[in-house]
Amino acid sequence: MSLLEVEDLAIHFGGVKAVDGVSFSVAPGEVFSIIGPNGAGKSTIFNLISRIYKPTRGTIRFDGTEITGFQAHQVAPLGIARTFQNIELFDHSTVLDNLLMGRHTHRSTNFVQDMLFLPAVRRAERAHRRRVEEVMEFLELEAYREKMIAGLPYGVRKVVEIGRALAVGPKLILLDEPASGLSVEESQDVAFWIEDMRRDMGLTVLMVEHDMRLVAQVSDRVLAVANGKPLAQGTPSQVKADPGVQAAYLGTEVAQ
Amino acid sequence: MKVIFKTSYDRDIDLHKDVWSRGRIAALVAVMAALPFLVGEYYLAEATNTLIWALAGMGLMLLVGHSGQVSLGHAAFLAIGAYTDSALMNIGLPFVVTFPAAALAAGLFGALVAIPAVRMSGIYLAIATLALFVIVEEMIIILEPITGGVGGIQAPAIEIAGISFDRYGHLDHFYWLCLTVVVAVTWAYANLLRSPTGRSFLAVRDSEVSARALGINVTRTRALAFGLSCAMTGLAGALMGHYIAFFNYELFSVFISINLLLVVTIGGLGFIQGAFFGAILITAVPQLIAILRGAARDSLGVDIGGMPGLDTMLFAMILVGFIIYEPTGLYGRWLKTKVWFELFPLARRDMFRRQKSYLKTERQK
Image (cartoon, rainbow over all chains, first blue to last red; front, side, top):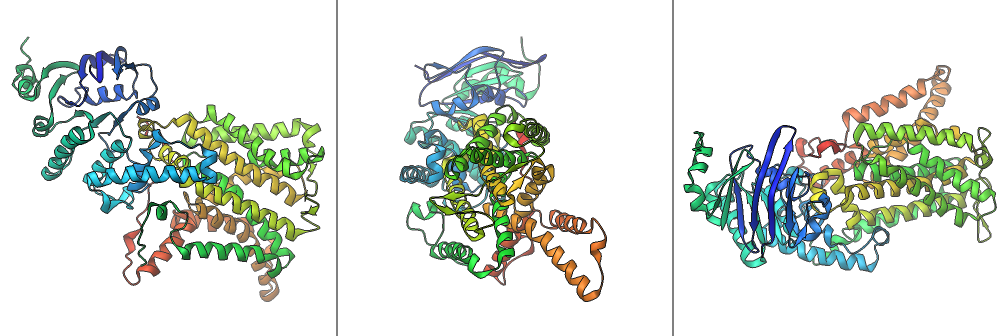
């Protein structure tokens, strides 16, 4: 059974059909990538899955639950975490605190307990810290633990955002252009991490990415979209060879 | 510069990073507790006033500094606290009941108001809270049987377990009462900031969209911040009522709201300590100007007291100066000075670049 099933998903902003009839399903433990030219609707698909936008039609099912009617904050507790294309970190907090914020769905205390800082709060904090340190070790972020986000270089912020998503402890992680703006070495790190996420953590990865080399390296299957419509789906080499995909990237007319 | 070698997660979870920092706070509290033996009646009354302002400042700091919402109507919650406490005491309830009731009334009212208000942000929220303030002010006048209307209300003398905490009879006792409340609230506030609740406030302040993606219910979190902020302010209002002893709606004017906003911005947004620095500035500077004016009259023979509005103008100029030259507030200046000495002689000018404003709640996609 597939972990995430998207069926006939569409969203129209006025007359603009940003996403129009996209269907795909992601199996547990799979790395699934969505590619497409700028403005193809890739990030919009992500925003639909994380319930920031309300779809015009179509359904999204995750782990057997229909989440189409959910609110944005109800998605993370199910085990879906995401990153953003334009990094959305908490700039005035440290790396450590950003990752700890990722533990929100696992909080076990209420605000009265928090204010009195009862022993239960300390126990929970220790457990959160342990988990967050594991993530930091995995992503090699220890050197930045106490640094403010506002002063960090772009590449590190990108990684911190992946770390925050991992701190959620998700089943499915949505990576919105994890390698954009990164150097060759940095994006190679991202490729290794994605492989480790799948192999060691048992995560399912859904990724939007432009870097075809990264996509080909890590993806099991690829979905190509253009103008909100699906073009082709299959293994990376199948999709790359698809004439419609080539036309969309090279700008020639799509053969009807 | 001191490097702390951490050997357990508890070192990060603890409120104080080492024995020295814990000792400094203990020493400060000890000096504050000994204040009635050290200074006269006049300065003790001023210190009490500063503590009450710091308490109200912490209330607004939680809202503006830590959850990124602005309020121009916090005087309304001071008023709700003061009137709840005094009205309940006037019907014979003891202070130990009325004081928490004041916090509860202000907090619940705040949270209730917050539910529609949290959908707004920035300047719109400021206007909405200002409108709320006007409504509360009118309600105080209308509800004359409870509030005494325009005539005002008497805040009865406080008595707990047979000990008088009357502001006039036993100012030292009243001062200690205020100090205890302030210490307790500060501790709870600091605890909040190192726990999941505080982190969710910061998350909502800095990026709503990622807060949602992490499973934080933004509406509920902002309403909680609003409620807690108003509860703290309600406590300050109750104490303020007792400090003034007889008051009417005019005590809680819109200028109080603006002064409170100044306390948090000049003190340093986003730091508990900022509320204290701001409160000291806002209560001490007018007194300082008055003292200087007296000195000028006596020694130079210049009577600037004859020029109305000069005090206010001087005060305003100091505030404007701060906003322009020290946007991180007094606490920011304190941190910079500390780091400068710690790193001496290696501190650089551009180590503290100007931070972006906090009120960027419009970043929702």
